[in-house]
Every structure is written in structure tokens, then in C-alpha cells.
Amino acid sequence: MSEKEIFDFIHKQVNELSPLLFECDKQKLQESKRLFDTFVSTLSEQTREQTTQKDIFTIALCALCSQSHKAKATLLEALRIHFKEPSKRKQQEQFISRYTHLQERIKAMKALMQKARKQLEDIRLELENLTQQYTLECARFWGKMKSSLGLSKTKKLIINTACKQARTQRALLASAQIDIYTQARRVALPELMRICDGASTTLDSTQETAIYSTTLNGKNLQLIDIPSFTDEKNLSKETARALQQAHCVLLVVSDTIKNSTLKAIKQGLNKQSQVYVLLDKSATPNTLKPIANGTSPQEKAVIQKLKDSLGQSYAGARSIYTLPALLSQASCLIASHDLSAATQGRDNLPTQEIQDHFLSPYKDSCSDSKPCQKQRLSDDSGFSDLAAFLASIIDSRASTQQACDNAYALLQELAKVVDKIASNYEEFFNAATHSALDQSFFQPEEVDRLSHMISYGLIAPITQIQEQIHSTISSYAKQLAPSPALTANST
Image (cartoon, rainbow, N blue to C red):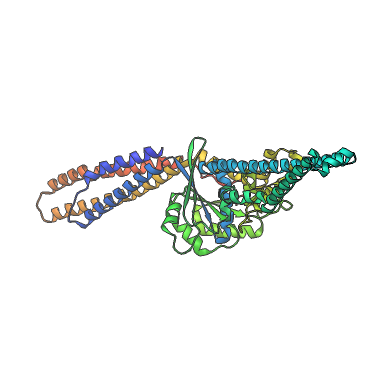
């Protein structure tokens, strides 16, 4: 059954049940009406949610502690690039345009400086030739006479050329003192640092929920960046809502695990959310090794603690090198020599040189092919497997299965409500029948007939609705497939 079919079935049963319930001063019937009205209110709210969130698969990224924030931000940046999230693509286009403009401007300045130096060299040679020519002229009698009378054209050319040389030298000296290259970088780099790949990883924490929407294989996808936990005991409304929306939660763990934070996350999850734990690992180009199948004893202890805390919401765990993962996806990084001109205290940005450093071990097997080197780094960092896994659950289950699970949970709630209503009505009409017998208002045969009519008119339809709901639940339960799990390096 699809989500729509389940919701249609629920609405049909509610519409059939509604006219069978009536206001009454009897406590059992009051309780039945109240239970039904409460469920109808919940149904209306979930129907609205179904409309707004339909066909959108939501992945929430959450850092378990403040030390994990940078790892979470780094992973989110890599996923935004990999899934071609529109706002990230726009940033990259802006970066390429502005960085290209900066490089072209610097190139033009260098060309002008080169031209000025060449002019200065030409002037020097011209002055040298004129000086030699003037020396030869002065060796002759008439040449010496013209020079003494101020009539020598060569001497005038020497004076003019010497002035030109002085002006050119002053201009070059002024340019060197101003350092126009650094000045150009200073103007452009603050904006480039804001939009380069990895810019968000330098922030100390996420202050507000950020939602990034994209598509994958024709399916809508949302990445939600959940704010850092300021109060582990009580989730903010914004954080609680983000967790409730999430079909899948990526919980990034570095080292410290607070039980209070885990408890808050557990309470904030919806019933169908799947939590995948990502253990962040640090590495240098020399120490980075492919993510192995299996975990260390320390990691197993962390995973077991998370399993125990998250219960049924826990869906799997794996390790990942978040910085190499980002570097394997990044294409808009600033060169270190450019960054040093205007770091403004933010020299912890990933740079082209850092990326090249991590890619260098793959040059032997990939030659000079940067895409090949990036793919190898992505594989070894564990990012390729993670991205493929996320794509598989988006592609296979996406929001369709998640929405069906949510609708199925709502159907189970309806079953509980109808079971209680049926029980209440049966008790009420049994009591009414016995009361009529005791008071001898009717002959026994008439009481039996009355009881049959009441049961056939009210209890039987309610029982029929009850049976239909339980039959549908049983049928749907057989169709449920096991949830996907992290197969590689999972525990």
C-alpha cells in the first residue's frame, strides 16, 4: 500500500465511524467521543504535514558534542557538493567567477609591471647608445663646438631619455612599495573566503537550523543542519522540529559522549527515524589508510553505548575521515599564497595546497588525472561508500517508505481508538439491556429483539470497521521490508 492509499483508508474508516458516535451523558460514550475527536485532530495535523513534506526525503546532520561540530560541518559541506545542492553550486559559480577575475587582474598587473620593466630596460639601452654616440661626437671638433654652444641634438636626447628613465623608475618603485598584488587580494579575498568550499567549517557552531534542498535521481532531498546543543536536557523548538522531520539522522561523533545529549536526541526523534552514527577520524596524507571493515575496541565501546541509548532508532555505524572527504569533493579552494595576504585570523581554511598534499599519494597510480586522484581519496576516506549508501536509501525507500511507515503508525493508533470505542459501546449496550430486563419494561422476547436491533444497528458496524482496520494492518505488516543498514564497516 502507498502512503496515499493508507491515508485514504484511514479517512474512509473515520468517515464511516463518525455518524455512529453520538453525545451522551454516559461516561463510556463520552470517553469514546473524546478519543475519536482527539484522533481526528491528529489526523488533520498529519494530513497537513503529509501535504507539505510529501516526496521529500530528509537527512538531518547532528553533532553529538561541540568537539564534533567541525566534523559535522565538514561532512555537510562534502554532501552539499556531492549532491549538487543549488545554493552550494551558486556559491561555487560565484567563487570561480571572482577567483578567475582576481587571477586575471593580478596577471594583468604583472603584465603591466613586466611591460614597465621592459620599457625601463629599453630606455637604459637607448640611453647607453646615445651616450656612446655623444662621446664619439665630442671626439670631433665640430661636435665639441656644438656641445659647448648647446646645439647638440644628441645631448638633448640624452637629457630627455634620462628624465623618462627617472619617471619609469619612480613608477616601478611606487608600485613595489604599494604592493598592488597584495592590495588586489585584500579587496577580493574576504568575499572569496566566505563562499569557498569549506568556508562553513570555520564557524564555531551552528546557531540556527539551515535547510538545503536538492534532487537526486528525480527525488527531492533535504539536508538539515541542526544547531549545536546549548542545553542537553531540553531541545530547542527548532532542533526538536528538525529531528521530527528527519527520515534519517547522521549523528557525528568525535570523542566525548554526554548521556543527557543522547537522551534529548532520543526523545526528539520521531518513531520512524533511523539514526546512523559516523565516527570521525583524523589523518594526514602519510597516515591516511582506507577505512577498514571493523572497528577498534574503543570504537566498539562507543557504538555499544550509542546502541543502548538510541534503542530501535539505531540503524548502524561507520568511520569516516571528514576532512579528506571534503577535499575529495572540493573544487573551489584558495591558494595558500593568496590566503596569506588576507587571512584575518582565519588561516584554518582548507587550501589548494592542503588538497594537493592529500592527493599526492595517488599520483603514481593516477598520473596527473585530478578526478582520478579525488575519486581514490573519496574511496579511502569512506565518503564514497557513505554517499552511495545515502543515495540507495533515498532511491529505494525515499520518503515513500518513510511516509508509509508514518501512515502505518497512524493506522495503528486508529486501531487502538476503535478497539476502545467498540469495547465501550459493547459495555454500554450490555448494561442498558440488563437494566431494561431488571425494570421489566419489556418481555424477555422483546428485550432480545431490542438488543439484537441495537447490536445490528450500532455495534456491528463498529465491529466491522474494527475488523477491516486490523485486517489491513496485518496485510501491510507482511509487506514491510527490513530497513537498510550500513553494511560496510557497520556494527
